[in-house]
Length: 511
Image (cartoon, rainbow, N blue to C red; front, side, top):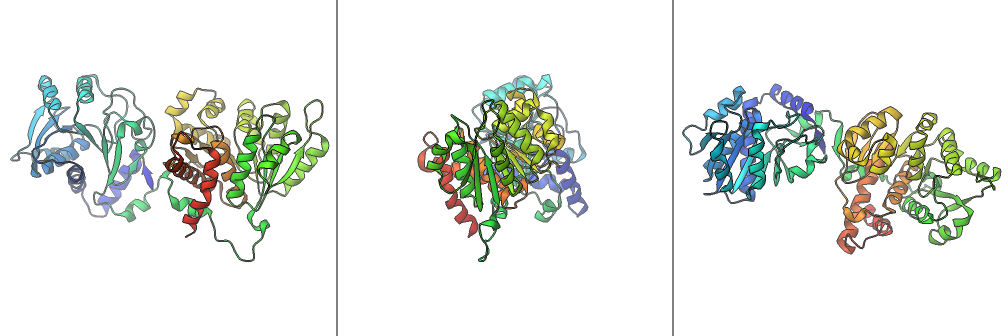
């Protein structure tokens, strides 16, 4: 599903106008669609509805919605929050309110009457600022926003809550917190990016007369991941195929005290169909891991007294790496000097795609220049804390700029970036991004990231392109988590339970 920023939305509307529909008709359709949405979900006859209208085209949408709601029997008051409408089509829609039952008041002239009006409203429609808003709400509107926040009325925002910045989801001052947001034609960035997402409430996308073909032709750099992305990864298996047909994956994971990371990543990789999985791990944890996962082959890594790999272990590891179609490194690896040397060596040697997770990322954060030595595609899967280390910032800063930082890091370092968290983002080096909406807080447990890393590495080993594998696996990972939450509860579900849900999801995809 396409997600548009402000400029892309404007371009889409321009293309629609070129095809024969006017801006005035688009505004009429938008306001009417918003009124239908409200009527469908709530009783409106004889209900008190206050429509807050700004001076731009979002206010024009509000004028149309007010007129249609009045025709449906609602008692409607329009509040001009910034005085008279400032665009030609908004003025035309405002003039159409004359002769209707809609009452209008000017907030700038009589601000003292607004609070009682809002307090008695059943519904408040927010049409103050639209997708073009940036910066912070002016101070003279602060009292109005404070009153709206204190009201018990259901708040419905048109296109985007006023105060939210469309492209980033950022909020720099006061903001309307909506119960529902009616988005016109497509989703917008702020509907999915925090903190704006929280202020949108439930988002409904309504058509306004722009055809699906026009939307499909509109370029975008952000999409919501849907099942079709996951389905594209799972290709039919030919009758004459063998294990060599489905990739050779090297997993360099685990350390003393972190055997579970190797178990979970390997199990997930096998469940996702890799033909041959080789788990390279310290000899000391081999009995633990091998007793839990019997399908892989194992390369045992022995260390010299100084902590470095023995010559034989390094030769064996690099030999299998040269024949691998993908390599996963980092899950439970630790940050010892030997681990730093291993990550450095693999980055400089591997010609196959590398999936780097957990301690692999932490090591790179302290030695960022080694990314320049990578000979093959690199996929990195940091959580916000690891991303903060990569960027030398803090988690709050990362969370406030998730899409921006994921894109900039991917471009600067030529990697596919998977920034995990609520609304995991997968971004290619070219800036194309997928935002995921599956998953739940029950997945916030140690080991979930190991499962995802193993899944991505498995599909990359099978020849799936890095961005498709990243976005598709994040979607499936979240779906598996949602199924586990339904059956086991968010509290009790485990990362290993998600692996066991994968066959069920693959059966659905393959149908």
